[in-house]
Length: 428
Image (tube, rainbow, N blue to C red; front, side, top):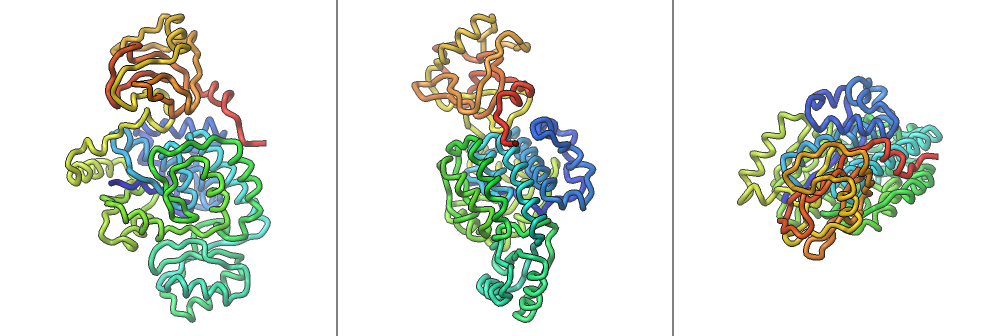
Protein backbone atom coordinates (compact mmCIF):
# COMPACT_ATOMS: atom_id res chain seq x y z
CA UNK A 1 0.00 0.00 0.00
CA UNK A 2 0.98 3.63 -0.45
CA UNK A 3 1.14 6.01 2.51
CA UNK A 4 0.92 9.73 1.76
CA UNK A 5 2.84 11.95 4.20
CA UNK A 6 2.76 15.73 4.54
CA UNK A 7 5.45 17.97 6.07
CA UNK A 8 5.07 20.69 8.66
CA UNK A 9 6.54 24.08 9.34
CA UNK A 10 10.28 24.30 8.79
CA UNK A 11 10.32 22.70 5.34
CA UNK A 12 9.37 25.94 3.60
CA UNK A 13 11.80 27.86 1.38
CA UNK A 14 11.64 30.93 -0.89
CA UNK A 15 10.15 30.27 -4.34
CA UNK A 16 8.95 26.83 -3.34
CA UNK A 17 5.90 27.02 -5.60
CA UNK A 18 7.64 28.19 -8.78
CA UNK A 19 7.75 24.78 -10.44
CA UNK A 20 3.97 24.34 -10.19
CA UNK A 21 2.79 27.64 -11.70
CA UNK A 22 2.05 26.12 -15.13
CA UNK A 23 0.48 22.95 -13.76
CA UNK A 24 -3.36 22.75 -13.79
CA UNK A 25 -3.38 22.13 -10.04
CA UNK A 26 -1.99 25.64 -9.46
CA UNK A 27 -5.58 26.95 -9.66
CA UNK A 28 -5.92 25.78 -6.07
CA UNK A 29 -3.59 28.63 -5.02
CA UNK A 30 -5.94 31.32 -6.35
CA UNK A 31 -8.83 29.66 -4.59
CA UNK A 32 -6.84 29.50 -1.34
CA UNK A 33 -6.13 33.23 -1.61
CA UNK A 34 -9.81 34.03 -2.10
CA UNK A 35 -10.94 31.93 0.85
CA UNK A 36 -8.17 33.01 3.26
CA UNK A 37 -8.01 36.62 2.04
CA UNK A 38 -4.23 36.21 1.94
CA UNK A 39 -1.89 36.48 -1.05
CA UNK A 40 -0.86 32.84 -1.01
CA UNK A 41 0.72 33.09 -4.45
CA UNK A 42 3.10 35.77 -3.15
CA UNK A 43 4.09 33.51 -0.25
CA UNK A 44 4.80 30.61 -2.61
CA UNK A 45 6.69 32.62 -5.22
CA UNK A 46 8.14 35.83 -3.84
CA UNK A 47 8.29 35.80 -0.03
CA UNK A 48 11.75 35.97 1.52
CA UNK A 49 13.16 33.41 3.91
CA UNK A 50 12.53 35.82 6.79
CA UNK A 51 8.89 36.30 5.79
CA UNK A 52 8.40 32.55 5.54
CA UNK A 53 9.85 31.99 9.01
CA UNK A 54 6.78 33.76 10.41
CA UNK A 55 4.34 31.12 11.61
CA UNK A 56 1.31 32.85 10.11
CA UNK A 57 2.99 32.76 6.68
CA UNK A 58 4.81 29.44 6.61
CA UNK A 59 1.86 27.33 7.72
CA UNK A 60 -0.66 28.51 5.14
CA UNK A 61 1.97 28.40 2.37
CA UNK A 62 3.15 24.87 3.18
CA UNK A 63 -0.42 23.61 3.61
CA UNK A 64 -1.50 24.98 0.23
CA UNK A 65 1.53 23.74 -1.71
CA UNK A 66 1.19 20.24 -0.26
CA UNK A 67 -2.41 20.13 -1.47
CA UNK A 68 -1.45 21.40 -4.92
CA UNK A 69 0.90 18.43 -5.15
CA UNK A 70 -1.76 16.08 -3.81
CA UNK A 71 -4.23 17.30 -6.42
CA UNK A 72 -1.66 16.73 -9.15
CA UNK A 73 -1.18 13.15 -7.95
CA UNK A 74 -4.92 12.53 -7.72
CA UNK A 75 -5.29 13.69 -11.32
CA UNK A 76 -3.09 10.71 -12.20
CA UNK A 77 -5.55 8.40 -10.46
CA UNK A 78 -3.19 7.43 -7.64
CA UNK A 79 -4.56 7.31 -4.11
CA UNK A 80 -3.19 6.17 -0.73
CA UNK A 81 -4.22 3.49 1.73
CA UNK A 82 -3.34 5.69 4.72
CA UNK A 83 -2.15 9.21 5.49
CA UNK A 84 -0.07 10.96 8.13
CA UNK A 85 1.23 14.48 8.55
CA UNK A 86 3.95 15.97 10.69
CA UNK A 87 2.54 18.73 12.94
CA UNK A 88 0.92 21.18 10.48
CA UNK A 89 0.95 18.33 7.96
CA UNK A 90 -1.68 16.55 10.03
CA UNK A 91 -4.24 19.12 8.82
CA UNK A 92 -3.15 18.41 5.24
CA UNK A 93 -3.56 14.68 5.84
CA UNK A 94 -7.10 15.23 7.12
CA UNK A 95 -8.03 17.10 3.93
CA UNK A 96 -6.36 14.40 1.84
CA UNK A 97 -8.38 11.71 3.60
CA UNK A 98 -11.73 13.49 3.24
CA UNK A 99 -12.08 14.11 6.98
CA UNK A 100 -11.90 17.88 6.51
CA UNK A 101 -12.87 20.09 3.57
CA UNK A 102 -10.18 22.19 1.92
CA UNK A 103 -12.00 25.38 2.90
CA UNK A 104 -12.29 24.42 6.57
CA UNK A 105 -8.72 23.12 6.61
CA UNK A 106 -7.51 26.43 5.23
CA UNK A 107 -9.38 28.39 7.89
CA UNK A 108 -8.12 26.16 10.69
CA UNK A 109 -4.53 26.50 9.49
CA UNK A 110 -4.95 30.27 9.37
CA UNK A 111 -6.33 30.38 12.91
CA UNK A 112 -3.69 27.96 14.17
CA UNK A 113 -0.88 30.00 12.67
CA UNK A 114 -2.18 33.25 14.16
CA UNK A 115 -2.73 31.69 17.59
CA UNK A 116 0.73 30.13 17.66
CA UNK A 117 2.36 33.37 16.48
CA UNK A 118 0.67 35.32 19.28
CA UNK A 119 1.67 32.69 21.85
CA UNK A 120 5.29 32.98 20.74
CA UNK A 121 5.16 36.79 20.84
CA UNK A 122 4.11 36.52 24.49
CA UNK A 123 6.88 34.07 25.40
CA UNK A 124 9.54 33.86 22.70
CA UNK A 125 10.88 30.42 21.99
CA UNK A 126 12.43 28.27 19.30
CA UNK A 127 13.43 24.69 18.49
CA UNK A 128 16.56 22.71 17.65
CA UNK A 129 17.24 19.23 16.31
CA UNK A 130 19.51 16.96 18.33
CA UNK A 131 21.39 14.26 16.43
CA UNK A 132 23.22 11.25 17.80
CA UNK A 133 21.47 10.68 21.13
CA UNK A 134 18.76 8.21 22.09
CA UNK A 135 15.35 9.50 23.08
CA UNK A 136 15.79 8.88 26.79
CA UNK A 137 19.10 10.78 26.84
CA UNK A 138 17.51 13.87 25.27
CA UNK A 139 14.63 13.66 27.74
CA UNK A 140 17.15 13.52 30.59
CA UNK A 141 19.00 16.55 29.23
CA UNK A 142 15.75 18.54 29.19
CA UNK A 143 15.09 17.60 32.82
CA UNK A 144 18.60 18.59 33.81
CA UNK A 145 18.13 22.16 32.59
CA UNK A 146 15.38 22.61 35.21
CA UNK A 147 13.97 25.31 32.94
CA UNK A 148 11.52 25.69 30.07
CA UNK A 149 12.73 23.16 27.52
CA UNK A 150 10.99 19.96 26.41
CA UNK A 151 11.09 17.24 23.74
CA UNK A 152 8.85 18.44 20.91
CA UNK A 153 9.36 15.85 18.12
CA UNK A 154 10.45 12.21 18.18
CA UNK A 155 11.47 12.26 14.51
CA UNK A 156 13.66 9.20 13.99
CA UNK A 157 16.17 7.03 15.83
CA UNK A 158 18.96 9.39 16.86
CA UNK A 159 17.03 12.51 15.86
CA UNK A 160 14.94 14.35 18.42
CA UNK A 161 13.74 17.96 18.37
CA UNK A 162 13.53 20.03 21.54
CA UNK A 163 11.75 23.34 22.06
CA UNK A 164 11.71 25.99 24.72
CA UNK A 165 12.62 29.54 25.63
CA UNK A 166 15.82 30.90 24.12
CA UNK A 167 17.85 30.94 27.39
CA UNK A 168 16.68 27.41 28.22
CA UNK A 169 17.68 26.12 24.78
CA UNK A 170 21.15 27.55 25.20
CA UNK A 171 21.56 25.78 28.55
CA UNK A 172 20.19 22.56 27.03
CA UNK A 173 22.66 22.85 24.15
CA UNK A 174 25.60 22.78 26.59
CA UNK A 175 24.23 19.76 28.46
CA UNK A 176 23.43 17.87 25.24
CA UNK A 177 26.96 18.39 23.96
CA UNK A 178 28.34 17.11 27.25
CA UNK A 179 26.16 14.00 26.91
CA UNK A 180 27.58 13.23 23.47
CA UNK A 181 25.20 14.80 20.92
CA UNK A 182 26.89 14.64 17.51
CA UNK A 183 25.17 17.71 16.13
CA UNK A 184 22.64 20.33 17.24
CA UNK A 185 20.82 22.24 14.49
CA UNK A 186 18.62 25.35 15.05
CA UNK A 187 15.34 25.09 13.13
CA UNK A 188 13.84 27.79 10.90
CA UNK A 189 10.73 28.20 13.05
CA UNK A 190 9.34 31.05 15.08
CA UNK A 191 8.15 29.35 18.25
CA UNK A 192 8.52 26.40 20.61
CA UNK A 193 5.82 24.26 19.06
CA UNK A 194 4.43 21.14 20.73
CA UNK A 195 5.56 22.33 24.16
CA UNK A 196 3.68 23.92 27.08
CA UNK A 197 4.70 27.34 25.70
CA UNK A 198 1.88 26.93 23.16
CA UNK A 199 -0.79 26.63 25.87
CA UNK A 200 -2.02 30.23 25.30
CA UNK A 201 -2.92 29.28 21.71
CA UNK A 202 -5.28 26.48 22.72
CA UNK A 203 -8.41 28.50 23.47
CA UNK A 204 -8.41 30.17 20.04
CA UNK A 205 -7.72 26.89 18.25
CA UNK A 206 -10.42 25.05 20.21
CA UNK A 207 -12.95 27.70 19.25
CA UNK A 208 -12.00 27.32 15.59
CA UNK A 209 -12.17 23.52 15.80
CA UNK A 210 -15.69 23.79 17.17
CA UNK A 211 -16.85 25.79 14.15
CA UNK A 212 -15.93 23.35 11.38
CA UNK A 213 -17.19 19.92 10.37
CA UNK A 214 -15.14 16.74 10.64
CA UNK A 215 -16.14 13.61 8.72
CA UNK A 216 -15.09 10.00 8.99
CA UNK A 217 -11.99 9.78 6.76
CA UNK A 218 -12.08 7.55 3.70
CA UNK A 219 -8.75 6.07 4.78
CA UNK A 220 -7.03 5.91 8.20
CA UNK A 221 -5.06 8.93 9.39
CA UNK A 222 -2.36 8.30 12.00
CA UNK A 223 -2.30 10.98 14.72
CA UNK A 224 0.78 12.77 16.03
CA UNK A 225 -0.34 12.58 19.65
CA UNK A 226 -0.65 8.80 20.03
CA UNK A 227 0.80 7.41 16.73
CA UNK A 228 -2.43 5.44 16.25
CA UNK A 229 -4.73 5.25 13.22
CA UNK A 230 -8.06 7.03 13.63
CA UNK A 231 -11.11 6.49 11.44
CA UNK A 232 -13.74 8.60 13.21
CA UNK A 233 -14.11 12.28 12.42
CA UNK A 234 -15.42 13.08 15.89
CA UNK A 235 -12.05 12.16 17.42
CA UNK A 236 -10.05 14.81 15.59
CA UNK A 237 -10.94 18.08 17.40
CA UNK A 238 -9.51 16.73 20.67
CA UNK A 239 -6.48 15.21 18.92
CA UNK A 240 -5.66 18.48 17.13
CA UNK A 241 -6.06 20.48 20.33
CA UNK A 242 -3.78 18.11 22.24
CA UNK A 243 -1.25 18.16 19.40
CA UNK A 244 -0.54 21.84 20.03
CA UNK A 245 1.27 21.17 23.33
CA UNK A 246 2.21 17.49 22.93
CA UNK A 247 5.30 16.01 21.24
CA UNK A 248 4.94 14.71 17.68
CA UNK A 249 5.40 10.92 17.80
CA UNK A 250 6.67 10.67 14.22
CA UNK A 251 9.10 7.76 14.48
CA UNK A 252 6.41 5.78 16.33
CA UNK A 253 3.93 6.74 13.59
CA UNK A 254 6.18 5.34 10.86
CA UNK A 255 6.83 2.16 12.82
CA UNK A 256 3.10 1.58 13.36
CA UNK A 257 2.34 2.24 9.69
CA UNK A 258 5.04 -0.21 8.61
CA UNK A 259 3.27 -3.03 10.44
CA UNK A 260 1.04 -3.16 7.36
CA UNK A 261 2.50 -4.11 3.94
CA UNK A 262 3.60 -0.60 2.97
CA UNK A 263 4.98 -0.27 -0.58
CA UNK A 264 6.23 3.31 -0.20
CA UNK A 265 5.95 6.53 1.78
CA UNK A 266 5.14 9.38 -0.61
CA UNK A 267 6.01 12.85 0.75
CA UNK A 268 4.19 15.87 -0.72
CA UNK A 269 5.49 19.32 0.08
CA UNK A 270 8.32 21.80 -0.35
CA UNK A 271 11.12 19.60 1.01
CA UNK A 272 12.38 16.08 1.58
CA UNK A 273 12.66 16.04 5.38
CA UNK A 274 10.04 13.34 5.92
CA UNK A 275 11.58 11.10 3.26
CA UNK A 276 14.87 11.26 5.12
CA UNK A 277 13.18 10.41 8.39
CA UNK A 278 11.38 7.48 6.75
CA UNK A 279 14.63 6.04 5.40
CA UNK A 280 16.26 6.40 8.80
CA UNK A 281 13.36 4.85 10.73
CA UNK A 282 12.21 2.12 8.31
CA UNK A 283 15.19 1.52 5.97
CA UNK A 284 13.52 -1.25 3.98
CA UNK A 285 10.59 0.80 2.70
CA UNK A 286 10.84 3.08 -0.33
CA UNK A 287 10.53 6.84 0.30
CA UNK A 288 9.40 9.05 -2.60
CA UNK A 289 9.44 12.84 -2.20
CA UNK A 290 7.35 14.83 -4.69
CA UNK A 291 8.40 18.46 -4.72
CA UNK A 292 8.29 19.24 -8.46
CA UNK A 293 6.01 18.23 -11.37
CA UNK A 294 8.80 16.35 -13.15
CA UNK A 295 8.83 13.83 -10.28
CA UNK A 296 5.25 12.72 -10.99
CA UNK A 297 6.32 10.40 -13.81
CA UNK A 298 8.67 8.54 -11.51
CA UNK A 299 5.83 7.99 -9.04
CA UNK A 300 3.60 6.54 -11.76
CA UNK A 301 6.41 4.27 -12.93
CA UNK A 302 7.03 3.10 -9.38
CA UNK A 303 3.36 2.35 -8.75
CA UNK A 304 3.00 0.52 -12.05
CA UNK A 305 6.12 -1.51 -11.43
CA UNK A 306 5.31 -2.45 -7.85
CA UNK A 307 1.69 -3.55 -8.04
CA UNK A 308 -0.03 -6.42 -9.78
CA UNK A 309 -1.99 -3.83 -11.66
CA UNK A 310 -1.92 -0.05 -11.70
CA UNK A 311 -5.67 -0.27 -11.28
CA UNK A 312 -5.11 -1.39 -7.67
CA UNK A 313 -4.09 2.17 -6.90
CA UNK A 314 -6.60 4.00 -9.05
CA UNK A 315 -8.86 6.18 -6.93
CA UNK A 316 -12.44 4.96 -6.68
CA UNK A 317 -13.56 7.42 -4.00
CA UNK A 318 -16.84 9.31 -4.18
CA UNK A 319 -15.65 12.28 -6.16
CA UNK A 320 -12.43 14.16 -5.59
CA UNK A 321 -11.40 15.67 -2.28
CA UNK A 322 -10.08 19.07 -3.29
CA UNK A 323 -12.27 21.89 -4.51
CA UNK A 324 -11.31 23.23 -7.93
CA UNK A 325 -13.26 25.02 -10.71
CA UNK A 326 -15.15 21.87 -11.74
CA UNK A 327 -15.63 18.52 -10.01
CA UNK A 328 -17.37 15.24 -10.74
CA UNK A 329 -19.24 13.23 -8.13
CA UNK A 330 -18.82 9.54 -8.83
CA UNK A 331 -20.70 6.42 -7.84
CA UNK A 332 -19.37 4.45 -4.84
CA UNK A 333 -20.53 1.16 -6.31
CA UNK A 334 -22.30 -0.66 -9.11
CA UNK A 335 -26.09 -0.62 -9.36
CA UNK A 336 -29.12 1.54 -10.11
CA UNK A 337 -28.67 5.32 -9.80
CA UNK A 338 -31.49 7.14 -8.03
CA UNK A 339 -30.93 10.91 -7.57
CA UNK A 340 -32.82 12.64 -4.78
CA UNK A 341 -36.19 14.04 -5.82
CA UNK A 342 -35.19 17.66 -5.25
CA UNK A 343 -32.31 17.38 -7.71
CA UNK A 344 -34.48 15.73 -10.36
CA UNK A 345 -36.99 18.56 -9.99
CA UNK A 346 -34.26 21.22 -10.15
CA UNK A 347 -32.70 19.69 -13.24
CA UNK A 348 -36.05 19.29 -15.04
CA UNK A 349 -37.18 22.83 -14.19
CA UNK A 350 -34.11 24.35 -15.83
CA UNK A 351 -34.03 21.97 -18.80
CA UNK A 352 -30.49 20.83 -18.02
CA UNK A 353 -29.72 17.68 -19.97
CA UNK A 354 -29.24 14.53 -17.90
CA UNK A 355 -27.55 12.66 -20.72
CA UNK A 356 -24.24 11.44 -19.40
CA UNK A 357 -22.36 12.34 -22.57
CA UNK A 358 -23.74 15.89 -22.77
CA UNK A 359 -21.54 18.96 -22.75
CA UNK A 360 -22.81 21.36 -20.09
CA UNK A 361 -22.78 25.12 -20.11
CA UNK A 362 -23.08 27.22 -16.95
CA UNK A 363 -26.75 27.57 -16.04
CA UNK A 364 -27.31 30.44 -13.64
CA UNK A 365 -30.93 29.47 -13.01
CA UNK A 366 -30.23 26.13 -11.33
CA UNK A 367 -28.17 27.54 -8.45
CA UNK A 368 -28.58 24.38 -6.35
CA UNK A 369 -25.89 24.70 -3.69
CA UNK A 370 -24.38 21.40 -2.55
CA UNK A 371 -22.55 21.18 0.79
CA UNK A 372 -19.88 18.69 1.84
CA UNK A 373 -21.66 15.51 2.92
CA UNK A 374 -24.94 16.24 1.12
CA UNK A 375 -26.59 13.14 -0.35
CA UNK A 376 -27.25 13.66 -4.07
CA UNK A 377 -28.69 10.20 -4.61
CA UNK A 378 -28.19 6.48 -4.03
CA UNK A 379 -26.81 3.49 -5.87
CA UNK A 380 -28.46 0.25 -4.82
CA UNK A 381 -29.64 2.08 -1.71
CA UNK A 382 -26.18 3.25 -0.66
CA UNK A 383 -25.90 7.06 -0.33
CA UNK A 384 -23.77 9.06 -2.76
CA UNK A 385 -22.37 11.99 -0.77
CA UNK A 386 -20.63 15.05 -2.13
CA UNK A 387 -17.11 15.41 -0.66
CA UNK A 388 -16.98 19.14 -1.46
CA UNK A 389 -19.07 22.30 -1.92
CA UNK A 390 -20.30 23.65 -5.22
CA UNK A 391 -23.16 24.59 -7.54
CA UNK A 392 -24.93 21.60 -9.12
CA UNK A 393 -24.67 22.04 -12.89
CA UNK A 394 -26.37 18.82 -13.93
CA UNK A 395 -26.68 15.05 -13.65
CA UNK A 396 -24.43 12.82 -15.73
CA UNK A 397 -26.56 9.69 -15.34
CA UNK A 398 -30.28 9.19 -15.89
CA UNK A 399 -32.55 8.27 -12.96
CA UNK A 400 -32.79 4.48 -12.92
CA UNK A 401 -29.69 4.06 -15.07
CA UNK A 402 -27.28 1.29 -14.12
CA UNK A 403 -23.91 2.80 -13.19
CA UNK A 404 -20.56 1.28 -12.30
CA UNK A 405 -18.14 1.91 -9.48
CA UNK A 406 -16.37 5.23 -10.09
CA UNK A 407 -18.70 6.39 -12.88
CA UNK A 408 -19.51 10.14 -12.78
CA UNK A 409 -23.16 10.80 -11.88
CA UNK A 410 -23.23 14.57 -11.25
CA UNK A 411 -21.24 17.68 -12.10
CA UNK A 412 -20.52 20.64 -9.80
CA UNK A 413 -18.89 23.96 -10.57
CA UNK A 414 -17.10 26.33 -8.24
CA UNK A 415 -18.84 29.57 -7.32
CA UNK A 416 -16.37 31.21 -4.95
CA UNK A 417 -18.69 34.06 -3.96
CA UNK A 418 -21.42 31.59 -2.97
CA UNK A 419 -18.95 29.40 -1.11
CA UNK A 420 -17.56 32.31 0.87
CA UNK A 421 -21.09 33.48 1.64
CA UNK A 422 -22.44 30.04 2.53
CA UNK A 423 -19.44 28.84 4.54
CA UNK A 424 -19.29 29.90 8.19
CA UNK A 425 -16.05 31.70 8.92
CA UNK A 426 -14.08 30.94 12.07
CA UNK A 427 -12.70 34.46 12.27
CA UNK A 428 -14.06 37.03 14.71
